[in-house]
Length: 377
Image (cartoon, rainbow, N blue to C red; front, side, top):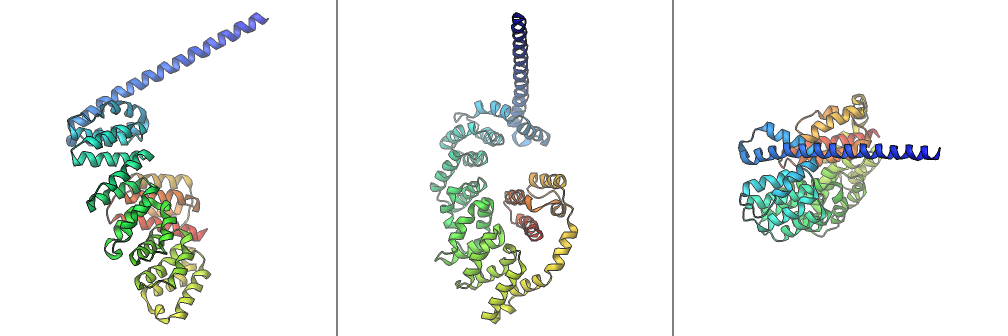
């Protein structure tokens, strides 16, 4: 009996080993087959360059989703600083970045350090930003320190913001010191992409002695990032702030930050009581009208709701993949719940990657969904 059990166990181990070997060989063969297909595709794209049809690019994007390791294995040996074709290297570093593989950081830095092409150098920085490791972030910060040109510096600010690289924040003071009326858009793009990572830093800037810094911080917190924890600091700041335009922004921001009607009304009543001229201001008139219509608006929002995790994800995916240009925002709101706020914040950051002023409108549409869900909660 003992011998039989041992024999059975031995046969069992052999069967398991044989099955494991079969699966390993099968995966290896499939991986090799994938890499052969990807290699052919990459060769076609880098040969055709700008003439490559969209169908080839779509096929490549699909491979980066389905088998990013195989894509990385194909491209990695080709990333050599000695490669004379800078256009091909520019394409390869950006294609490599789509895999998110950290193995590309070192060769991309080597190419950036040795290349003479401005386009290739910037594409290396873009690729590092997309990969997003701490080593990549440190290199981008070093590049920022070594770049005197204002426009190029702003480009690197944007790349680091897309990474949400927190060590960038002290460097952003140069953006906050700019005229908020003329250059507000620069801080919106950078801090909007940084998202919640930047909130504690901006709350500290509310205490700044510099008027421009305070103005930027108020606008970013009250109009763009809309963190509820900014409500109390902004209401307290209102009484000390000397810049009229900044005080106006505080008044018009309260509805984004507070969902309790009584708290809002108490603050506005206090403002109007201490200085009656505010009651006639455009900002206060709008907020008071908002309070009057609050119950009706809340009822309308509840009627629009038809929450569904599946429908939310379906609409969200369309909007995220298109950076907010394809998809239905009303359907997104109807299907969403307050628990979806983290995804909605990720969506608004993605929308800003369009790097155009018109993306601000779609960003604010997402903010409206976030605020509405907070009210309904």
